[in-house]
Structures are given as C-alpha cells and as structure tokens.
Amino acid sequence: MSEIIETKVLIIGSGPAGYTAAIYAARANLKPIMVTGNQPGGQLTITTDVENYPGFAKAIEGPFLMEQMREQAENVGTEIVYNMIADVDFSARPFTATDDSGNVYKADTVIISTGAKARWLGLPSEEKFMGLGVSACATCDGFFFKGKEVTVIGGGNSAVEEALFLTNFCSKVTLIHRRDELRAEKVMQDRLFANEKVEVIWDSTVEEVVGVGHGEDGTPGMTGVRIKNTKTGDESVVDCHGMFVAIGHDPATSLFKDKLPMDDEGYLIVEAGTPKTNIDGVYAAGDVTDKIYRQAVTAAGMGCMAALDADKFIAANE
Ligand code: NDP
Image (cartoon, rainbow, N blue to C red):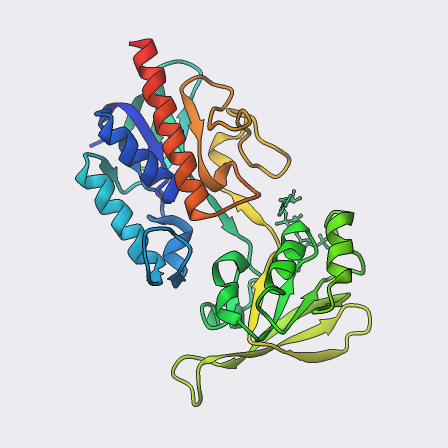
C-alpha cells in the first residue's frame, strides 16, 4: 500500500554525491531519506579498480567503495529506500516526489544527485572487453595503461582532453573520430595536434573490439579495434591495449524537465560555486550538474555542500 512519508531532506540518487549528502544531513540530525534509483551506487558500481578516491592507500573496487558509503550513510541515520522517483512537484513547499510504488514523499528540501551515464558505442564486443581495456574514464583508468598504446573514440572536448591526459602514461594515443573535423574547442585541438604521441584517424567508426575474452584461451584483454572508413568502406585493425570511449554523457534529468532550469545538454543549472538550483530548498550535486570534473571526489564534495545548505535553509525556515 502506498504511503505518505514526511522528511526534512529527500535525496534522489545514490552515487557519491547522494551518499555524502546523506552522511552530512544525517549527522545534522535531519533524518534524511534517500531514494536510490534503479542503479544503487551509481556509475562506480560498474568500474573495477579505484585508485583516486582519497583515504585508501591501495586500489579498491568501485562496488566496495559504494557499499562502504551506503553503510556509512545508514550507520549515521539515513533511511534508504530502494525505489525510483517517478514524478516531482517543486511548485510549493513541502516539495513532493512520488516513487514507482505510489509512495509520496513530502520534503522540506530536496537534494538531486541522479548522476549521469557515459554513452557507449553499443557494440557487444565493447561490453565483452569492459574492464579488460574498454573504459569511459581516462582520469580513472589511464594509469593502468602505462607505456601502452590506446585509442580514444570521439571528437568533442572530452575526447581531446582524455587523449591529452593519456599521453602522460601511454606510448601512443590514437584518436578515432567519425567525421573529418573535431567538435572540440580550437585551443584543445591545437594542443592535440601538437602532441607527438597523438595520431588522429578521421572518418572512421569502431566496428568491433578484438582480443581475448574471459574464459577464452590466452591472457584476457583487448588487443585492438577494427575500424571502418565511412567514406571508402575500408576496414582495418588498430592495435591497442585500451579503448576510451568519450562520446558524451547523458545526465539523468528527464524527471526535472520543465521543473528546473537545465542547459542544452540536460545538465541542471546551479548558482556558480554552489549546489543551489533556482528553487530555494532544491539542490543539485554531482554529475547531474557537472559536465567538467565528473569525479567521485568532486561529486562527494558537492553532496556535502548541498547538505550543509539544506541544513541552513531548514534552520532559517523553521
Ligand atoms: P560532445 O557531445 O561535445 O562530443 C561527443 C563527441 O562524440 C562528438 O565528437 C561526436 O561526434 C562523437 N560521438 C557521439 N556519438 C558517437 C557515436 N555513437 N560514435 C562515434 N562518435 C560519436 O561530448 P563531450 O563529452 O566531449 O562534451 C560534453 C560537454 O562537456 C560539452 O559541452 C563540452 O564542451 C563540455 N566539456 C568541457 C570540458 C572543458 O571545458 N574542459 C571538458 C569536457 C567536456 P560528432 O562530432 O560527429 O557529433
């Protein structure tokens, strides 16, 4: 049976931003409720080694990190609801949100931390080599490809930034783009073309990731990508140990369409340097509002800021 649930702080989404907001809100005695969404733990639950989240001397697994965050949030007093918010109404306070089971949350403040998802090429072989060379985050995984050859797919700022970052570790970085010009800013392009470790392959799409899969003969790992020239139809294989897909991200914001301001790409707009949306008491934290940094630690920082702001807002309005 559906219920009406009242809370001072409703947190929508359960990545690093959401859990950090939950920890801070719970420790401020606000008894937050978190509704997890359909991928509890978010993007980190589909990564393997995490070496850049401070506080762990050795690499940890993404799912382990998220499990720790969940337990920490619960231990300090967060109520976690494994459900999906289907609708929100921010037109009056208390704000309301309805989940898939028809439960209605009445909340004094709402922290949105629904995150974003990396876009993938959608090839079965891409999935097969996920964690065996295929990645969507050079900052997270580049270090594992020290001295190796890698490819980056895409032609926007992310692809160029990832390619340049990878030149710090890799012996060669091949950027593969489906057109004959990049979408990235000119200054980024200049940097890319000036880097001797970078080669660009134009007018080409990835048809298949090749290599040895789990359970197959040989050491598991990708060995290359088979590409097709879009103009000539010619196919060839580019030898590489890693493929970084950088073809954009989709923020999970469809729920907030026409309810909160967002940019052309659907990221929620907040007041610069804060997690404040244009509605007092509604905050956005993490990748749902950040297309530049996209790190677990930056998301966690924003989650903390959102909880501190929510606390102040509640105190001022009580
Ligand atoms: P973009 O949407 O800007 O670029 C995506 C790129 O991927 C495009 O070149 C696109 O090709 C290509 N692409 C899309 N789908 C496919 C596909 N299925 N197969 C092959 N290629 C594909 O995404 P970004 O992540 O690069 O950037 C998103 C936003 O974040 C932008 O506003 C960007 O400016 C910003 N950003 C800013 C940074 C900074 O300021 N430091 C760093 C990173 C991002 P095509 O060009 O043909 O459409």
